[in-house]
Length: 383
Image (cartoon, helix red, strand yellow):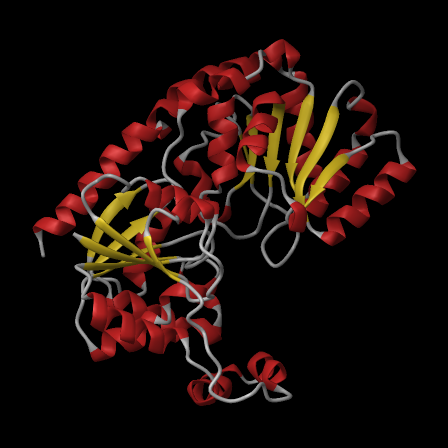
């Protein structure tokens, strides 16, 4: 089967597509943002350096795009070769058996023009806030509904988004719920998993923007600083506002929070190693799908304390059994209470580790890959 993946150059996309390597399928990759191909996707047939200007850059283009996006997208094809036009051209040449777009806003919308011109089988993987957040945004509602009504197949990383897609007009076939980046090689990761007694690290996801809410977590930690003696605190992928708050807290207290910045992140294997050292891992947002970092906390033995937008995290976390669910991501007191409870109840954490060790088997690479390949085989049988 010839499959054209339309996706950003993220590690999650590379890991998902990597499951199809040596599967007998011909894999093609196109990025609507025209970023350099991800190192782990160089084995595929990829198209890069495709974007070209038709006219020199005009002063005010960015302003127009920001303030009047509908008008900008009407005139954009006269200014440059657009992703939508390139996809029309590419699909005509390749004649793929399946076009599979990963992520809605930056990648999937552009396929609507190609779908209008030519017929092809279309699969889409919902990522993060694709549906949960953007379905309520006026600038996105129409396009989301148009995409979903044209889709043949849907992959999701959670059960919530299947229901959302159906409510928004999806009438195709759901291919199942899978981790967005595929599974994990548990045997390979085993040496990175530290014994319970050696875990003195509190790990925090550092996103704070339209969805992420790291600041309430930092404020919660500050409020219980006297109970954190003997623990190290590490914030990964911290946005600038989070770095600023960390520096402020470090000046005002003796917490000495360490961090890595969003624009200068360390490797995926280094992050997994951090999870393998952590006693608890906190991820907090007002909108998301199933964060890969939640799954990584589970497989690496860190006790997850995770926000629960739209009840999405209930797919993996039984509150008070194998983790804690944050019901209000803005509530510093709730977050502080849950962190304290986890740190002070070693019996809870040990039981959670056993529960999550069993859960991790369902996240094992070969197990997930087998189910994913089965889904593609089902699609192939319907062509």
